[in-house]
Length: 309
Ligand SMILES: NC(=O)c1ccc[n+]([C@@H]2O[C@H](COP(=O)([O-])OP(=O)(O)OC[C@H]3O[C@@H](n4cnc5c(N)ncnc54)[C@H](OP(=O)(O)O)[C@@H]3O)[C@@H](O)[C@H]2O)c1
Image (cartoon, rainbow, N blue to C red; front, side, top):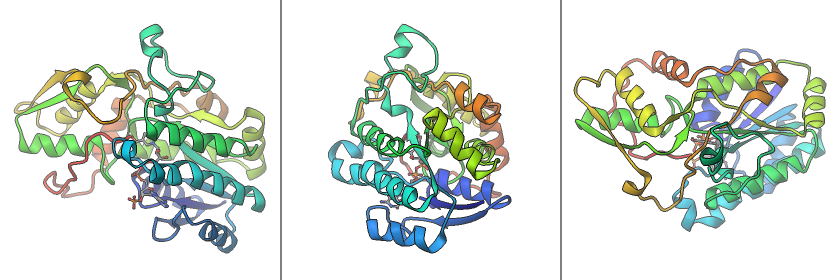
């Protein structure tokens, strides 16, 4: 299969390129290679590379900054996927776009402690979620394309919660981490393998599945935890547990410009059943992530960006 990956410089984009490169012909375009706010560039890229599948891993992911930077967030998260979907449709390519748990408000956790399903009502709490919801709607308006909602993504590339916790643990003896927001951490390597599984079929079979199902899926590991639970496991696997205390705090103790859903758990049953994939437990994903850390990784040089989504 010929696959074009946009946003190939991001943490998910890099993992997709790595996982799919062995089996498929992959064209990896980072922002310099294809800026998705440029409609002519999108057309030119699809004309030049003639992909059968486009994986759109590009997004504006600065959840807090989006509150005051709506136009930029909207351009990347809503307008760009709309343009990509249109261009892909015109050329007969399948677009697989990535969305987020932040399309939900998290109120489900207080009523029923189950994962969100694809047909649960959306109600974003902030600008990032609003723009991502607009983007997924634009893609799904074209039957035969797909949208995979993800949550709590981390890996060895880019800036993410895991890397921030490791850096802080190397510098401090106490971390204060929110313990009243629930979700499931997802290793980019596991997500990329799931996408590879999804693409492991003839292109027309994939198109038929996306067409017949409507194309919307939740892709996630299993086993709900909190940011505090996630941080505790990161500290343990990082070898800091005998020195660093992970203190549980509340959302009210750690105010942020954008509100976060208190319950972000996605139910991956539909994706698993449709594509024959077994969701891993998030703890296994984190152990795998540690086992795949580049040799000589140092916490000192890591970015201070807090939990993005
Ligand atoms: N991270 C999470 O926890 C999380 C959770 C749920 C869903 N998701 C979704 O998962 C997907 C992948 O996210 P990620 O974590 O891999 O994000 P990421 O590491 O921030 O990567 C996003 C990439 O998109 C690029 N980009 C932004 N605007 C662009 C534009 N106009 N044209 C081309 N490229 C552009 C960024 O480039 P620059 O670095 O130059 O800005 C960056 O390399 C996104 O759809 C995101 O919404 C993420």
